Image: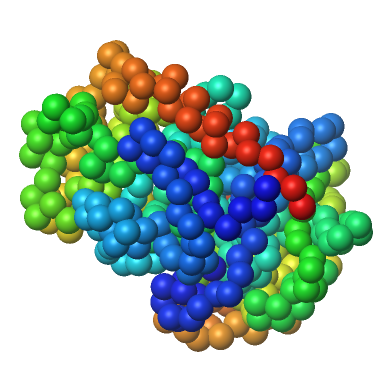
Length: 254
Length: 190
């Protein structure tokens, strides 16, 4: 947000600095979910999320430097609503929800309904995000990938996140989300539909790759061309399943 | 008390800034108002780490030190905290902090522009970690760019650190804690 001042050379009239509110700086670890207070810095969140989703922690290490992660929060990343905010596809595939508060009012909405357009959210004047709830999928496989030109301290070209269960060789409970593929961080609903309840096979993965074209029509920009984005999105899907196969998390029916 | 000033601990005293400008970055506060020019502006967008400072926060009678990018943090966020800039690491008698000595001994500085930022990141590592292996060092300086010395001598300097003697901040901790408490115990009435 400070870039509005330092780069766009605009003046901000008033700032309410929520990060000083200690009551919102907490992490609750429950049986079925983790609740993260809005002002909890990423550096405090990392060792906790690492226990449940190691890939989430791996992406956070590349989210920004120590200096950034000491200040940055999940809530800030969500409210900014950048299509390339690195925590967003991960939270989407984990079916996270957020609590929004205003004077005397509190409501909870699924994160997937929060983003409505390029950097536009459902947050209205007088409202703020107070906490984020991340479900714990004990039996699921969670994978996340960030593609950027440099490893450290770089902006994603594409970020992908997969959360699925394998029950009797069938794909169940699958949630896939991508960043850098649309104006908002978004779930790949057609791709999910294609894979849900199907047997693991090369054929179905090819079909699922194809359905990503229905899910996303990305743009060209300085980080990646649209063709590259589509290609890498497809390849990350394959990579996810290839890794699952390699780690013998499932037997493929080739 | 409704206050139109912010107060933070700086140089062993409580520093008060009256009517702070919400658009003033900590970097500008340090360089232009506090007249400490050791902290540098590089990219001005939180990428290069030349502006790194360390902010101390009181948590349950302990001071937690964190490296932050002062170029993208606003002055008002310092309320109730302890601000440490590169000048604070050298004691009044001129003796250097172990992190500074290590950087000299291992030739970790050439043109010098990135050095204060590296010093502060390594100082934060020194305060927060107990062993300094390559992984810890690399993560600690992942937000600092150097374009001439190269990272090897800096990493060598960091590897040589041993946190077996309390530094001046540890020795001064009680006083700092009491200042922070005095400062955060203000009651606000709405």
